[in-house]
Amino acid sequence: MRIGHGYDAHRLTEGRKLILGGVEIPFGRGLLGHSDADVLLHALADAILGAAALGDIGHLFPDSDPATEGIDSRVILRTAVKMAAELGYGVENCDVTVIAQRPKLAPFLERMRANIATDLGVDISAVSVKATTEEQMGFTGSGEGISAHAVVLLH
Image 1 (cartoon, helix red, strand yellow):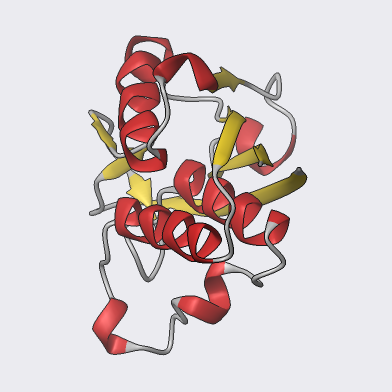
Image 2: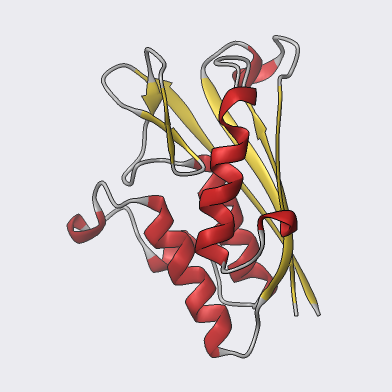
């Protein structure tokens, strides 16, 4: 068994869709990034890659590559799962926490879990997605951005 941890953060900006866990969230701003900037899936993909000692998504999908501009982060996650599987690893379970002052994410968490379970090829009971605020402290608390932490167990 192997354990991996992932972290990602992106700045909120005007003119972009907010996508978290593969779910489009109605909000006046979205996350800035080369891809769709889904911090939740980026953190999870990095956790999988880290557990399998395969580097990180920045090496696999560099922001200097025009071919990956705007890429759906679910593709990034599925690629990480495939790469781990090629080494003989499968996902046992994952636990992800999104840190955002706004918007409230509770109504979207089950859809995020379902997307992730599909992409990991596991039962939804093996996927935990939580959301919290930072009580108006730091860059997430002030509404400048959103971040996420992920932990994954590979078998």
